[in-house]
Amino acid sequence: MLRQPCFGTLFVAQSLLTYILFMYCAHNIKRCLHESCYNGIVKYMVYDSASPSLIIHENPPVENLVITRFPQGGDPFDKFKKVFVDIMEWSIDNPVPANILYISGETNPHLTGLINKLGMDCINTLLCVPYSLAAFPTNGRLPLVTTDFHFVRSVWSWSELSHGRPPFFTKGARGSC
Image (cartoon, rainbow, N blue to C red; front, side):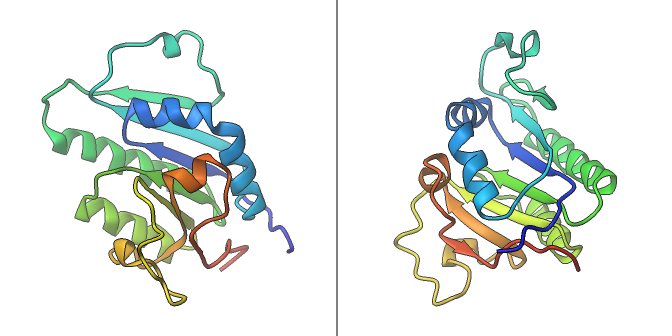
């Protein structure tokens, strides 16, 4: 398969726990993304409202790491708004083709709309869901669990992605639009 150059990959995690699990499995995930032709410099954005402060700010284990903390029990719209603005700024700074891997257990209709808009704008939108997708037949289409994400290029369950397995569903990376 011909590998197209890619200008960047944005990793968005909705909790610090997701990020810590990602770091533990980072080698498998990076290999999995590379083998699926999603390449480029990676920027990590983590949004956390449940975990205590860690030393990650002083010695980040990776380059390009941004952790944004929110108070527990705070307004969930503040967190959503920050994620939304950060993704929009990143999409402006990164020419297509670029990749965004969104990992979250929560879905927000506005964020779903943003992910779809980025997919329409030729960004490879990748989705990782927290549950197994084996129970969701695809018949060559997106799994039922992702029906709101019309422009997603690949879908993994957390188990598949963290173990470096290929995506459950893929249309393949877009090299250009």
